Image: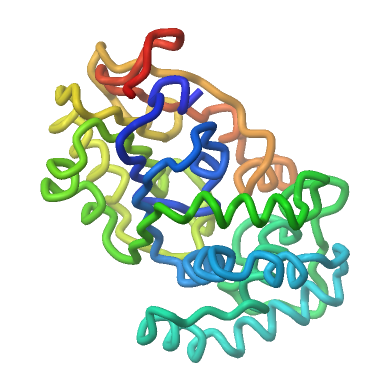
Length: 280
């Protein structure tokens, strides 16, 4: 639904990249993009897959084993500080094993906390979901295709608003901006996000959208939960249901969180109505 309303934009901007599902599923070849994420493991994964996708794929292929899940989590936590130090200090650095293990863990770990918390002797792996690296779609060819997508991509690692500064939006008119900020603390499990950032970031994103939403050169999508954002009437609000990911896994396992049925995306007035002509 996002790309139907963005079309082929001059540049796609995603300040909260996470797993990159929207960009990965972009239907257009050679889409220029600017992406950002504070999590060094995400940046490492994309650095590695851009240059050596075959090796990352090999490191990502492993069964959903509880012993390996515990052992790899402990290894990742033990080496985390050194790893992040290399990532911050060397723009050419990437670790192929960490990239593959991170992708495997994101597909195997239930809920939040992968590469972020200490673990005991037992941790039940996700079973039977066929998600991520465990899916039939995940092949060496798929990893190579991902690498191709990143040939025209700029990866940032800092504050989200750097991606949507006037310098960038003025330089790239006709931009598609996908904002999926950490949800407000009162709207979700406080442990949902690996990197604990500013609790007001969702509010900041909404305020930015309200300020720039009338700019028809920008096609903006803002994600949140039902009732989290009060947007003007000329913004289109679409409901969708999450069938996977951390939120859905948590809802199924605890019965406490039902946020996967509260997902909403608000689209600015500059977005396309599906079926209309796209930008060249």
